[in-house]
Amino acid sequence: MRYHVRHLTRYTYADPPHRVVQALRLTPRTERHQAVRSWRIEAPGELHASGDAHGNQCHLLILPRPESTVDIVVEGEVEIQPLADGVVADDGILPPLVYAAPTELTRDTPAVRAFCAEALPRGLRGPADALELARAVCARVRYEPGVTDVSTRAERVLELGHGVCQDHAHVFLACARTLGVPARYVSGYLMTMTGQIASHAWIDVHFAASGWHSVDVTHQQFTSDEHCRLAVALDYGSAAPVRGVRRGGGAETLHVEVTIRRLS
Image (cartoon, rainbow, N blue to C red; front, side):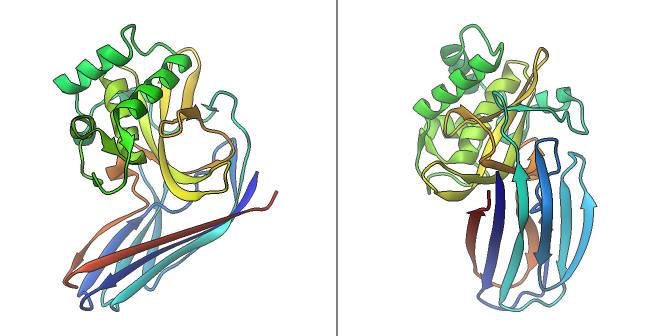
């Protein structure tokens, strides 16, 4: 599939900030099944391109004296090939064992261990178990926006029983790592079969026998050519499409608008 993507991120401040610095992970990854045909970033400030430790394309945006409204727009075309059972052929820059380490958002806790024992009594042994874990996560954590935020830990998500795609991903990651299986967070875009378009999050899980399998936990299925990959990392904190700091500005309002058009 080939898509045209336009993604607007708009920050509106009560007062003009003194300074804003943003890290942007808004360029799709180049992988064997995913090719970037064209891509551009428009932002009102200095942009410095680089790559991060996970092989993601990053831009550092520096705004010394921004206005009260800051628009960041990315636009371009990406071509994505189907995946068989979600198998991602690219191993990535870092060895899989790096992604077996817990993070603050995906800690090994008694609540996580108890959930693992209930969901996967025989462990996480292969791709079929990964889908079984995705089903268990969604049965335990019902999709509901507004209950959590990007700093909510996996054990708290299990306690609340509600969350969104990033929460599903974090609970899966916490379980996989607790069971000693490498897994990484993925941020990107999704166009569903119904035509719904959204920024999205899912996971890759690694098995020694078959490599990386990409799983959309929220939809309880392997990913394929409707998932555009922006960044992989240990959790949301290091894969967020836009994240930064500012000085001044008062109250902040965020507006995000993603439009995707299927070209072929």
